[in-house]
Length: 254
Image (cartoon, rainbow, N blue to C red):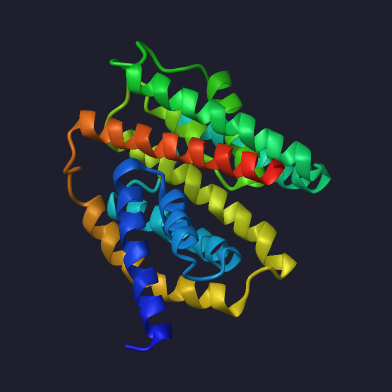
């Protein structure tokens, strides 16, 4: 097997694992896929990030289509609106921040994510009632800022939704809708700027059949994990995100 063929085959294996985790938890696609690619230096990370945007959009809408859940629940409308504003604001803010200030924010954010994960892990029961629209809006705004600045919108949304008195299916569907619309907005911002390389498009095109089959399989079956194990997996992923973000910020500031 040639080196190039091996690279693309390995990439598709990474995609399959990351997409399956996304279908189980409602998030974590970018965390796992970009983490694996960054650790192996398989392809340039910039191209991987852009390809992951298309993969994320495809995963979200395939999942919702297979679940017959292509609708927007009223409770997440404030989140969607605030998130869209936050994405644009975060992208603009990123261009104004000095390198030191940016890394300091990443460090603070990483510590906060770890704290949220530990709090979620210790919470044995959901909230007694749904959070207010204001809470959903504020969380959406924070997630949008994180998406625009750090490409990491998941932690605040996961922390909020997994504490609501909702079924796992509704939580998964809500997260997929939010991330699907968020990635679509990111594409509208990035593509006109000419940042998509031919390699990024090739990687995304190769991944689409894998995305379709893996997501279709996962969406039509109940989670193989118990609620306790699933919650542990989610907290572990959040802690990994926070620690990785914090450590990389510390190294960048040295």
